[in-house]
Image (tube, rainbow, N blue to C red; front, side, top):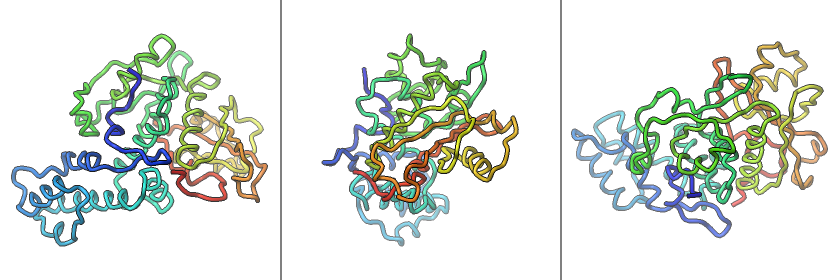
Length: 335
């Protein structure tokens, strides 16, 4: 078995001529299967009628009056969010194009869960054919909150939801449909168990070694290269750095909110205390293969990417920063 991340629903989507993901009715119906959307037993007639109509025709136009007629206020809000998000997806030729437009314009009004699911399925498309389990496990940082721990000198990242049991309900209805166990043992992905990643990928139960100088950060660099090439059509090389000494942050991208704050402090000439330095998980140097892709005023300047953990040792990566934060001449979806 070499397929992975079945729960993202990539098998329900079509592919466009450029390789981008094209929305299908089957994919839209997965959103209708979400527990907050399925009408409960005591739902009003208006909500039941809307649900039935969209099950029959998922692309059907929904008038504001149809949602306003729903008696339950929480249900009205859920339907407003879902229909607005669906309309965003249908407005663009591919999910990739919809995602770029979303992060460029700001994801106001879009639940973070929906944005993460978009990243999940687009990244699955970008990594199609990748057989390196470490790269795939590193890519989970794009859409899954990580808990970091120091164990025997190694910096290990494990899925927060898996180890914490914070959400007994599956994030995706497909998880229930596929019968994926809610609980699982945690193993650190390595040469001996890498082949097992594919059958376990939807359980998110393998940890990643992010210690500087080891292959976990290199794997994350490969995943970021694939993401940028797929979503923006720009070829880059990304190299993990072993330390932050003598680094000129003339242009940098924080891969999470904490990293952005740290980068801002360094750029402003502020010395970092030891506690702050210890929150830096990874530093990467990015090189554009085609210098013409870069804005002329910063051409030749190094571009650095920073990944950090919060004071409570979590990593919440923001892959949208790789889309909006690079010094590109043009910002548009590649496919």
